[in-house]
Image (cartoon, rainbow, N blue to C red; front, top):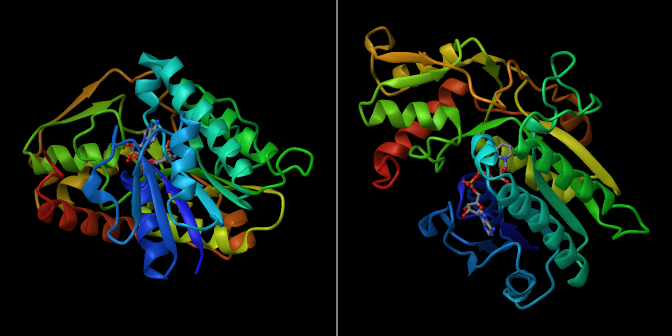
Length: 321
Ligand SMILES: NC(=O)c1ccc[n+]([C@@H]2O[C@H](COP(=O)([O-])OP(=O)(O)OC[C@H]3O[C@@H](n4cnc5c(N)ncnc54)[C@H](O)[C@@H]3O)[C@@H](O)[C@H]2O)c1
């Protein structure tokens, strides 16, 4: 049994990680300011600390909340929207950049050995080829991507013996989807936006021609990789893609979303608008390094994962409102 601090677990991905940790008998403390999460998403059995990852005092409260030393940190709290980062780059840099540096300082103060970080495929920007490997150069085209990349590199640096000596893992996550994803936030998560539209009987809006493509990975599979990283990542720093290696176009995705809700895609109203800044054209992950390093592979197909997400949305009263 280990003691794990998960930041951002009132949100979508963090709640899956906390849930899987608790299921195997770990003790979990959640630090989240509820700015974009929901208190009811924090899994039962975890200790909840409401607080801000930019505050050293809040961080130390979380580190002390389980009554013993924390073994590993999973840091996911942050602002997760590429598009909102264009409205408020300074806020993005504060929450995702300064917030991550404060969490690293908190890890050092509290003697933690393992730090796992939520980086993003947006760190790459337009890649020189597909599928994207971790060795490809990064050239982000959104403020969010810039900050994620900077924060990720701070995490990588923290692994050096002369800095903090952490065992550090940064996951460059592609498009994660699943239960507890926001279906109401128009800035975050295209699959959640489409499912929310269909479940509320709204038309779907596509930015660009819809032929841009993404790699959609189920949150339960992602959480499993995080836990394998806590248990078995190598010493030093490791950067890993988390995706499926499968490309899905936005046009394929909206049709699949309509069908997953039991409706007819041919009859659903769809409009096409200008593309948005920061929107990348094609992205798909090479996941061989995660397989080699962690022995990880995704298991849930897009069809199955969407079905699970729709089933959850239909039973959770707050999901679509
Ligand atoms: N969803 C994806 O596809 C995806 C892909 C790559 C990376 N990520 C990253 O993974 C992490 C989790 O993403 P998500 O989709 O679960 O988002 P989410 O918004 O559901 O979860 C983020 C959580 O962080 C909390 N938070 C925000 N600012 C905070 C602060 N200053 N202090 C404490 N808590 C704060 C929010 O309340 C929320 O509960 C984010 O860092 C995001 O950038 C997500």
